[in-house]
Amino acid sequence: MPENVIDQFDAARRQLDCALRLWLVDEDSLAIHTLAYAACCLLCDLFGSQTADVLREFEGSQNFGEVPNFLKHADRDPDYVLSAHSKKSVHLTLAFAIRLWQEHGREKTPEMIAFLEVDDPFRPGYRASESLKFVRHGAILDEHSAETEIQRLMTRPSTGGPSVTPKTDDE
Image (cartoon, rainbow, N blue to C red; front, side, top):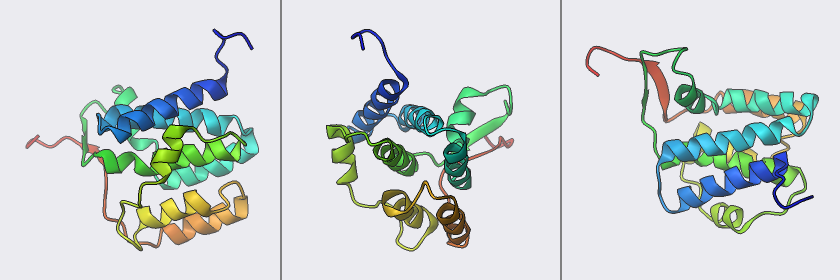
C-alpha cells in the first residue's frame, strides 16, 4: 500500500496509539476518551455486523459511548453536563480498544504494551474492575459468553464514574 494511503486499521492504530501516549503522560482525559472511542468504533465495525453486534452489546452495557457522544453531539442535550471525568474514566475504553486490536490478529504497539503493564485502577470486585478482567481475558467475541458476562457485571456494585446529566441551576 502506498505510504500516503491510510486504511481503517492504520487509522484505528494511530488513534489508539495517540490516545495511549496522551494517557501515559497524563494529558486531557476528554481528548483521550474521544480518540479511544473512535478507535473502538472502527475496530468493532471491522469485524462485520454479527460480531460487531456482540461487541456493541458489551460496549453499551458499559456506557463506553456516553462521554464521547456528549462531546460531539451538543444538539441532543444542550443543557446537559459531564461530571466526574478523569484519566481513570477512560481506562476501560483503552483496554477494550487494545483487546479489539489484538482480536484482529494485530501486533501490539509499544504504547499498547506500556498501557497493559499498568495495574487495574478500579476497586476490586466492583463493576469496572470485573469488566476490565473480562476485557483482558474473557471471550469477548463469543455471543453467549458476552451475554452471560454482561448479566453478571450488571449485578456488581458500581463506584459511579463519569455521567452525563441535566444541568441544574447550581451549575
